[in-house]
Image 1 (cartoon, rainbow, N blue to C red):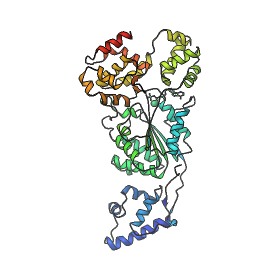
Image 2: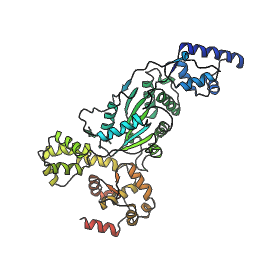
Image 3: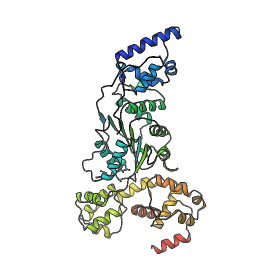
Amino acid sequence: MPRRKRGVVLTAEGLKKFQEVKHEFEFQNNFGKRFTLEELSQRVNLDAITIRKVLNCTKGVDKRTLESLFLGFHIDLCESYYSVPDCNRRQDLREAVCVSAFHGRRQELNILDKWLSNDCSRLVTIIGIGGVGKTCLSSKLAELMQDKFDCIIWRSLRDAPSIDTLLISLIQFLSEEKETEIELPEKTSDKISLLIDYFRDLRCLVVFDNVDTVLRGGSRAGQYLSGYEEYGELFERVGELDHQSCLLLTTREKPKEVAFLEGETLPVRTLRLGGLNETEGKEILKSKGLKGSENEFSTLIKLYTGNALALKIVATTIKDLFNGHISKFLQQETTVFGEIRDLLEQQFERLSDLEKDLMYWLAINQEPVTLYELRKDLVTSVLQLNLLETLESLERRSLMEQNIVGFTLQPVVIEYVTSIRCQIPIAPLYSSREILVSTTKG
Ligand SMILES: Nc1ncnc2c1ncn2[C@@H]1O[C@H](COP(=O)(O)OP(=O)(O)OP(=O)(O)O)[C@@H](O)[C@H]1O
Ligand SMILES: [Mg+2]
């Protein structure tokens, strides 16, 4: 179990001792002039922000930090020179969604609990296709983690806040409004350093929801919108540096730093969120008042791969148009309509032309297809040359799935892609296999 650590602060006695010895040093080594923060920083081997924080005596710092500071002036750190600050648990979940009608996800919650509580993961990403339930799951997790963290903060990135705005709001909350905006360092990377200082002193859980909003469409997955690149620096430093907090991201697309740093035994982890299972999906459909046999419920859930939002949308339609009868909806053999189409379109439109080409090819195949088969069948040389990176990019955008047989798409995605085939600006990529597949599958 991680040690609950709130850091230590200088006591009045500790501060007095430090100031006295510092004056002596200034008198002997600096012509009586006060050391600047930079000079202090060089002498004690700590950055200026940390020194300022220590001498403010309000926020806890690592005990080793105090030891370095005192060592720089040849002072032994006695126990009476520091104490544990009085820090109550705090949380800011105003932007989190309400999870009163939450179903299932026990297995996913157990995994996340283990990563956060036992494995001390520093950067955790929940990735999945739109509507699958990332926001809902992370809200539930934040609720369950209340006793395990000193601070819990939830921020939605839906309106694409600048990183500085976000960092300022986090630092102000963590400092209990003691750090004012004017006093904060100007450079983004210094603000990130300050945030990580807080991440060392306090055990914080910070959730960034909808991270895909600051990522760029069109190019390869995981790149940032212009002006938002420093989010990458934040993710990288939170993932790499030593601290006791966790930054949890929810996103449809994986940021590139996460892809580079993640690993099953590393402090950077990714949970690929699939749909709800049959029992969980049935609970949502039944709560909407749908009627049908067990088989019909199961068919409907499989058609939408347990996507929570799609199930909610389709349930409303079945209620409105088919008097709640699942069988009547299934008879008309259309799964992509209205808001479900909008949801898929939002994600499809972010793809590069090569990714769209590949999506079309995967849709044509319908069944999982291996890399070997794909390579053999693609006749456009551009796509053939870029096949690996295009596949990897699609995989990072949650639109494509991979199982033991090969690469494939969800049934609704297949229907969507096939339905917009004529709008895709692709070079001819027909091959004998495509003709064969489309003929045999009608
Ligand atoms: N476990 C669940 N139990 C009940 N409802 C759920 C569950 N998971 C998701 N939902 C519902 O499904 C809808 C979509 O969920 P959510 O917003 O969490 O998806 P998302 O993956 O975050 O989507 P997006 O990529 O658009 O942000 C919401 O209305 C939510 O309340
Ligand atoms: Mg969401």
